[in-house]
Image (cartoon, helix red, strand yellow):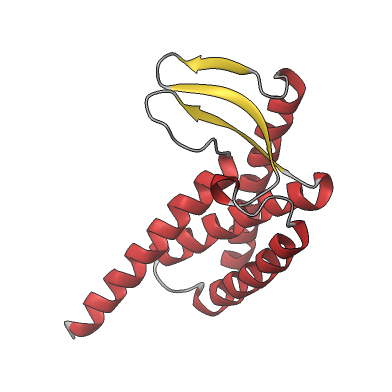
Length: 155
């Protein structure tokens, strides 16, 4: 039971960090403005993303809410069932849940997701903290599942 509380606390802290960064950007950067943060590496740009990744499917908020609800439900259920499994599996699920809920909060409360990180050295989509959680979480989860599969075939 203690582990569940720690995991829930970590998810909550990650969501708070995401929301604080978004609030800072909204308060301090005009919509569409670009501010250099780490010169030649990362700039901050306040954008309102009304779509999915790479701004696809613009203004389909109910669709995203439904998909997020389903995916978060599955992720929470899977985490509940496998909370005692590998640290990597739990970490991947925690990041996916925190990222999904961070962007879900934006969609429900504002009708869009606040994006801000612009990579200066490559032409890439502008993203936010929750997107980073999701990306790293999926990578970690896939690696954990691959490791589990490889370990299972070696027994």
